[in-house]
Image 1 (tube, rainbow, N blue to C red):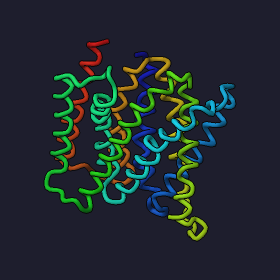
Image 2: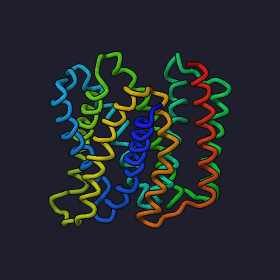
Image 3: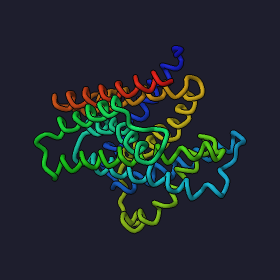
Length: 291
């Protein structure tokens, strides 16, 4: 990759890693569903403007049901679970658990597709990665931090399901930018009634400038801008380069959490991260060899 590609990749890792910091800042004054709905609703407006300026237009009506499913799997479920979890654990730890997404994707692809089977080497990588999860969760019960960590794993599983589901859009002739705009739009529409019933925003007091600014940053930086950079890297350097961001996000998130909030990961969390990244590296090596 060229230096500009590495710069874009690190920028993307900071934007996605920053989402965990923004979640924590938003939680200081806002409930979970308000944070998630604000993120997807504002991102939907921004990406719709980008799609319009690009001249592509929004996706065809026939693909909107599939986009709605993608919105649930890729946005509503994982965003909500991560925000709820970060009421109990740090953003750095949540980001480490988020790194298990490719492990779940491999398992889901093995069960749901015929062209992505689980090979013995991949199985070793998956086992190594989930061994890291066991190390991090050792001694935790099913309440408090333990439950929050399970919620993060549930979010990673949802991302894995979304990764397999999202394959259909390329075959349907929907561009990545149209897919992104359609997904966040569906997410905002589907989540709106639940948000109104649960959070009753008309009864909420002004949360303060920091939580509001954090939600704006989640939408504008960690969602809309991150999607645009993602597609830029994909076009310039390919899928292999994009896969590297998985290794960078935990370091970006943990670094931002330490720099801004003074948070620190425990030794067992670093050990678990090492095992997870080791498993991912093994699977990536197999995929590169196949290419």
